[in-house]
Image (cartoon, rainbow, N blue to C red; front, side, top):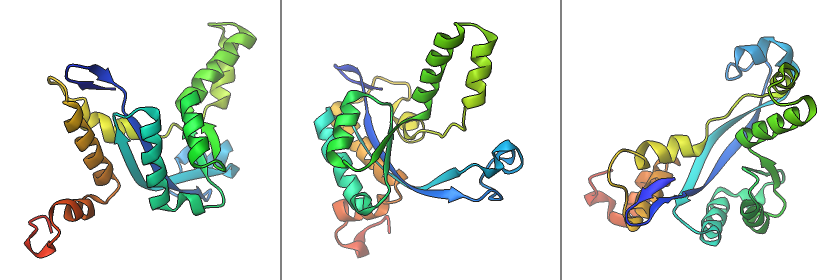
Length: 199
């Protein structure tokens, strides 16, 4: 959520595309407990090469941007693909329309809340057995794009954003965090690279 002048707090919709790789049991990118503990034989994945698109959009406008970023990344050409999201019906609709063969997975934060709901239904709220059950089923939390891309710049104290400025800044942040800012800037503002000060 970011503050938009004369509109109040508005939701930023964002898509993140990442390269996924299986980390070997001895890989230093795995946590020590995963390398040495009970989980050393379990599959653990690493995410890298992220790209983003974000805006203050309605669901269908977001869908068009998500689709374009997916095509840019070659997502449609992959055999195995997944969409990790919060399980909202509109996200399921958009992701299913754009990439119907992608396996949809509920993200960890929302999954964990559902684990607690199940534990409370089985053992009762506030029971130590419920907490023990959830603890046995927790997994490593992955940092989100909202926390790393949107919030540091868009939620600073102040009077808020004008909608058109918010859209422009979100587009720039998406390009910056995707490693394409120089390319995008050059294509937009410096068609003649020789005279462009950023190169």
